[in-house]
Length: 330
Ligand SMILES: Nc1ncnc2c1ncn2[C@@H]1O[C@H](COP(=O)(O)OP(=O)(O)O)[C@@H](O)[C@H]1O
Ligand SMILES: [Mg+2]
Image (cartoon, rainbow, N blue to C red; front, side, top):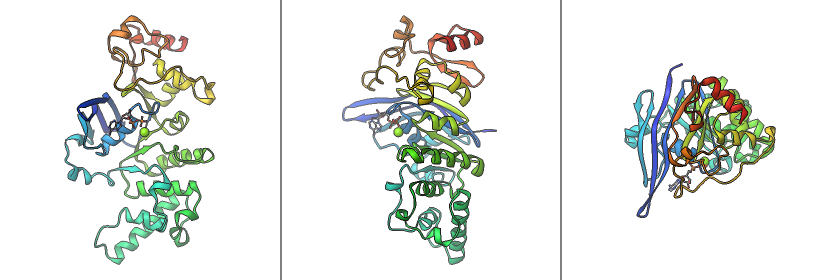
C-alpha cells in the first residue's frame, strides 16, 4: 500500500483584523491508498480546518505553511483552477447534512447525476450517467430503478438521504474522500446505520478516507488508523486498536475514558482558547502527569512502536516496554 496523502508540518493561521490567530501547529499525518484515517478530538481542536486545507476550502484570511502531498504533488502550491481538476474527481468530500445539502425540489437521482454531468453531454452520455447512478445506489444499499431515482428528499428516510449524500461524493470514484462529522447531523437512532454505510463503503469502493469525527466509537469501527488532535496539534497517531486499547497520551486516555462503553468519565477542564495557549505542552493545564518540563518545553513527537507516535514528554527517555507499562499503569 503506497502513501496517497502526506501532510507535513502543516501550519494554518487566520488573520483577524490586525491580529493573527495560529490554529494548526506542525500537523503531520499520512493516508495510504484504500486506508481510512480517523481524526478525533474535542470540538474546536482543528479537525475541520485540516480537512478544509486539503480541499482548498480555507477562507481568504487563512495563512498556510507546510506541505500537503497528494500522490507526491504539493496541493498547497496549486492554484485554485489547477486544484479544481482534482476536487470532486480524485479528491471528494461528502456534504455534512442532508437537510442543508440536498435540494428539496429535485429528484435525488438527478442530484447525484448532476455531480458528473458535463455541459454539452449528449443523450447517450446522459443515459450512461443515469445508469451509473442506479449502480451506485444499489452498491450503497438503496433501491435500484426509476422509482427510487425519482424520489424527492422529503419522500426518503434520514438514513436514505445520508446514503444519497454519500453517492454524491463517490459517484466520481475518488481516490480520497474527506468525510467531516458524518454522524453529527443524524438522529441517534441512525448513527449506527451511518457507521455501517461507511464500513460497507470501505469494502465496496476501495477508496482512502479522512474520517473526521468527534464520535470516537464511530472512528473505532470505521478507521484503520486514528490521529488524535488537541488544540491544533496531533498528539497521538497509530493503528486504531492500539490507540483505543493502549492509548499513551494523557489526552487520548481522557478521551477514551469518556466513552460510554469505557465508563463515561468526563475529562476535567476545557481546551484553552487559541489566544491563550499555555507555554510548553498545550495539555499541561489539564494533565494529571504534568511535570516542570511540560510547563517549559514543547514536547517532541516520540515513536512508541512502529507507526504509533505520541507528542508527550513522559515517554522521552523510556524504552518501548517501559512506555507500554507506563501507559497502562497511569
Ligand atoms: N475562518 C476562521 N477565522 C478564524 N478562526 C477560525 C476560522 N475557521 C476556524 N477557526 C477556528 O479554528 C479552530 C478550529 O476549528 P475547527 O477546525 O472547525 O474545529 P473542529 O475540530 O471542531 O472541526 C476554532 O477555534 C475555530 O474558531
Ligand atoms: Mg469540525
